[in-house]
Length: 313
Image (cartoon, rainbow, N blue to C red; front, side, top):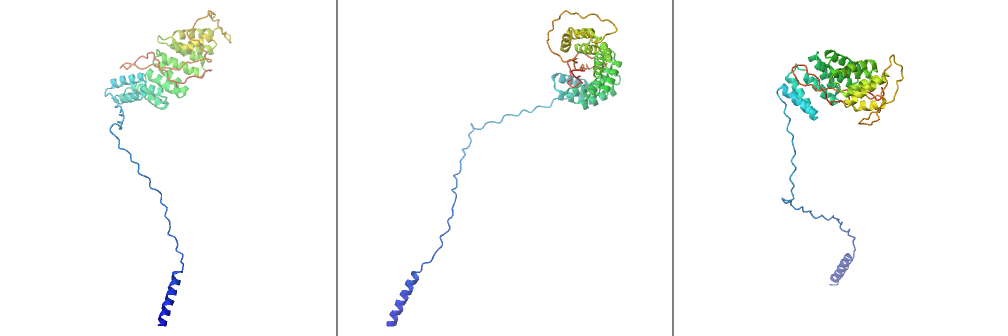
C-alpha cells in the first residue's frame, strides 16, 4: 500500500518537473507582401471619340507620250514650269523614240546644266555633237557644258566650232568672247563680241561683255558706248558699268584719238555700286523643235554655274 502511494507521488513530482521545463521555440518567419494595385479600367471609346485618319494623297504617275514630237513638246513645257525631273523623263523618252535625233540630247544637256549635273551634261552634249556634227546648237551646248566644269580650252574649241558652223549664231560668238575674257585675252574677246553684238538678236548682256573687254583694253569711250547700248537693252550690269565710268579717263595712250566722252549726266533707272569689271553669266536660248536646223531665239535662261568670272579680272 505504502509502495503504491510512493510511486504515485514520485510520478506526480516527475510530471510536474517536466511541465515546468521551458523550451525556446523560434518565431515563425514573417512574409512582407506589396499591395497589389487596383487595375485601371479604361473606358471603351465611343463612336464620337474615334477620329478618322486623314487620307493620304498618292500622286498618279505623269504620262509619258509615245510620240517623239509630243515628248519633246511636253518636255519643253515642263522646263518652262520648272519641273526638271519630269522634263528629264520626257526628253529621255524622246531620245529613245528617235535615237538619231540630236535635239533630245541637247535639251537633256541643258536641263542637266540647270541642275548642276555637269557630268551628265557633258555626256549628253557630247552625244549630240556625234549625232549632229554640223549642228551649231549642239556644239554651243557642249561649250556651255565644258565652261560649267571650268574647262576653258574645251569650251573655247566648242564655241569656235559652233560659230564656224553658223556665223549668225550670236550666242556662240558671245560665249566665245566670254571664254576669252576668262583667258584674259581681251582683244580676242572684243573681236568675238563685236560679231555677237552685230547680230539682230544681240542682247544687253552681250553689249555689257563687249564693254568689259573694251574697258580692259583701256578703250573707255568704246566701253561707255557698249555699256550704253547694253543698258538700253535692259542689262542692269551695263547700266551700272556705264555710270561707274562717268568722268574716267584712259590710263594708256592709244594710237588713235578717240572721240571725247559726252560729259552730260545721264539719268539711269538703277543706282547700284557694281564691283570692278562685272560680267554677266553666259546664257543660251531654247531650241525650237523643227525638222530643219532651228534658229536660236532670245531667252531668260541663265545657268548659275556657267563659268561666271570673278569680280576683278
